[in-house]
Image (cartoon, rainbow, N blue to C red; front, side, top):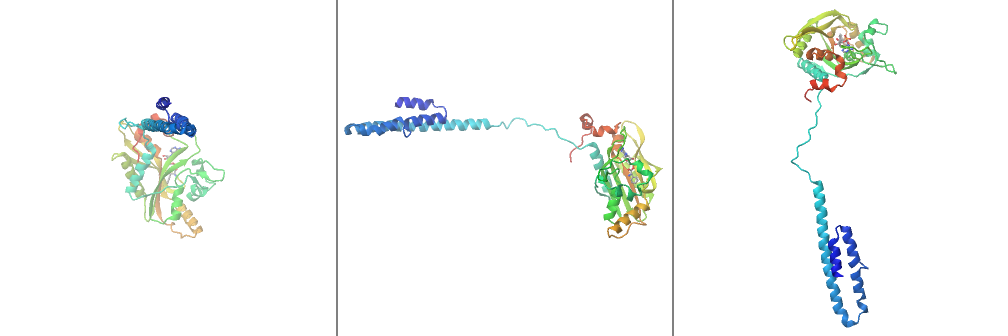
Length: 339
Ligand code: FA5
């Protein structure tokens, strides 16, 4: 029986199988245990020798079981460690990194240029009230100029801002002059798209208010921006234009000789001296909110320009629709550093 048991112990390949062998021989009702139990039936003179013999077998089996158990446990642990092993010398996985969109980079550049001129950068909301997008900007509901800004109306009567100019009003409600701000952000227009018009695009609004601010300050500021964007050779041109919230108003274009040897004028934005009706509307709103009237009689200039147009001019991109079509073949050519 000892030979047989040892044989079975050695051929057990799992701890479960070993447990079965253990139970069979030395468990409560195992074969060896039974042998010991039957000692009492032997004549007393045989008991001693027989008992010693069975105990020797039992010790041999116990020792063999223990040894086999250790071996199997060790093997199981080795297998687990092997399955968890990693090769730290393998080359790492290279994850493709994202980048800033070209328009984000242009806006970052613009913000830097204006911050160096002492402007504060603020942001506004894309869902606006008629009162700020139009009324306070001297564009009452019956004004034909409303047609210049085809509007996406929301069901609750609000709208998607058609330009960043409502932030002129919102800022003056909360702050006093003198002030110098730029406001980058998305704007929306319900209009047919073509190579130079999108229904969602960006603007950068500028507003300066103080005493004795003049058109010369406006021109100098725009020229400084153009040189910051395109280099020392950039020129700017102003042409009279009409905006209800400026008097006088102008459009400005930039001329730049680009690395491809082309040079042309590109209209970048609108600008002008802040209309006194805007200051009056701001004071009315301030008064209604229990604040002092402080703007009537001040002077200031404002401008609003399109960064998409800057990107098109700077990089020779022929169609504004490329920016938001999410075609990686286009976007990857202008992938900037993150951060
Ligand atoms: C305005 O939106 C005025 N709020 C700008 C302004 C501000 C004037 C302060 C005076 C004082 P306008 O609609 O012209 O003006 O738009 C300004 C610029 O936004 C344009 O010159 C152009 O660069 C850009 N832009 C206008 N419409 C689109 C469009 N559909 N797609 C891309 N860019 C556009």
